[in-house]
Image (cartoon, rainbow over all chains, first blue to last red; front, top):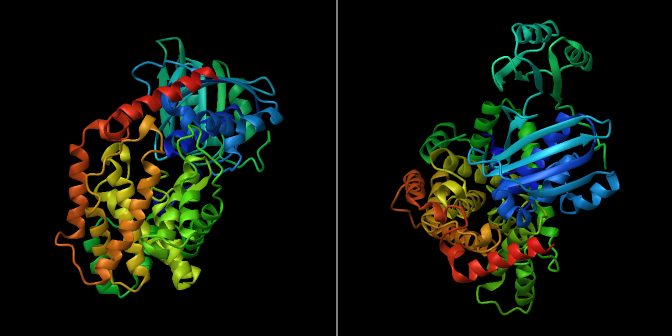
Length: 228
Length: 293
């Protein structure tokens, strides 16, 4: 914990979990999509649904999708900014089941270049978040590291090929998780790295046999947000 | 991060360094940061506190419509010049309302330590700076002390209402403000700890029972209590009044009280004030408005 976690962060109110955390879920989703969002379907679960409107959770999620940060004064007016940016969205309640964190949202996104992404994010307190599901497979990462998510066929050798490609590129893996729907079906690996992964490496990965989808969360600032 | 007032007091005695410097050193060592970068961050936080104070608009209301104009009312009353609590205390109260109202209305604030309790520390610090014409540099140092106190409370107990009730939010903020105030006015580490202990003791057991689950009722007005309580704890300390229970033990008591609290009064919006017939009516109205739109 840092001193500026206690005096700070600077954020738009009223709630670190229901507002700042929601912005961060939107941000992570936007980064994972890797392109400005054209369409978003937003499902609010649990406490996000019950008290979300009063806490501006809806506005905060949309602000996050527009790449606004937690202290962006435009958050209360994010619906207006979405219209300017050509982002159309729908917001509704969703039941993600008893095992989902009470502050969860399910986002289904289409980017301006046609890329699609579905994820569930949870706000776990103090503005910290966890992405718990990506394209229908369970994951568990915070978005605090450059994060590579690879959906692949559940066959021998894929993990070795992906990790050796990273090692050849001088990229150190900080944390790694593996998950699969069922044996021989689709699997997902999540690699949280110490360095950013170059675009060429991502393209190489995408072209590998047996790799279904490559998703990457970069921490490189986008400069001024691209949509707004 | 320091995890006890006892170690902070003994480091002050052994090094002779001011409290804020000890707290800064510890944080820099833990996070691999230079003192300059750390100072710059803290100065940014103090600047953001000034901004939030200036940002208030009494015509703005929260999404639910429950709060927003409290600080405006307090301002008019204070300007009429006949407050019971006097010019300084009434200004502190107005500031605490302003910042807490702004938070509820989705304006930019500094969580200190939380968004729900964000009015306490700035209300006290900005007002004493104005009243005594204190340079910014000393105020930033006081903010380090506030942060260090919050760190001790976070280490020994919690700063989350969901874990420890409102005593962990407004109670902690009040302890942070009281200690920062005493340190700012030249108090020793022991006096700083004493002020924090007195402030926290007076708010032990405070429930987190927000109406309709929103950071509005009673949160906005509790920021006033946290700020006023901090000032009285600082004044008691400067008068030489000691907490009979040592500061670290007070925090430990806060932790055990938090653990024994029913979940209904730990931010779930289902117990205490949130379970009153009026709160229930408000909750239903908000839900109906949501479905109607």
